[in-house]
Length: 140
Image (cartoon, rainbow, N blue to C red; front, side, top):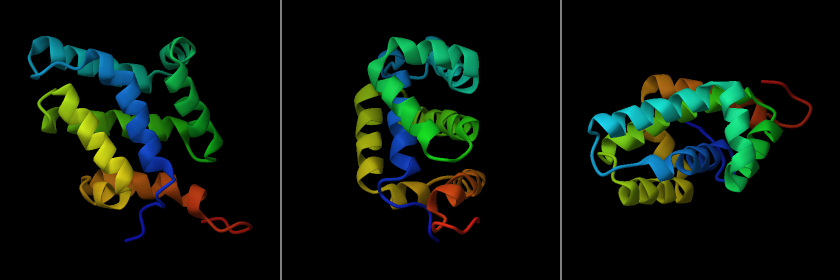
């Protein structure tokens, strides 16, 4: 299955979720960690709140600019990022260092990472990737 090229949307999504969440991660998904995850997912999915947050963080501003330049559904990118963030957070039990390592690993090998997604997430990723990877002059 052709998911994405190495320098495409998967590393962006991971960078985005990491930069948006890194300061709020705790070691376990206790009540406050679960609340922080939910707030971050809400932020990723709320365009107005996200735009305000983007203005406050330079790395997030760069990631947002990249997302908008891809030529795909930016809101879909953020929605899938929110889903992936939840998976990474749960798999790492909220351990910020482990989350960072998982993101680095995924950035080095986005194809393997994409294969680890749920079937629904893979379908969303394929849909988002189609306009990005379509050959010039051809629409998917």
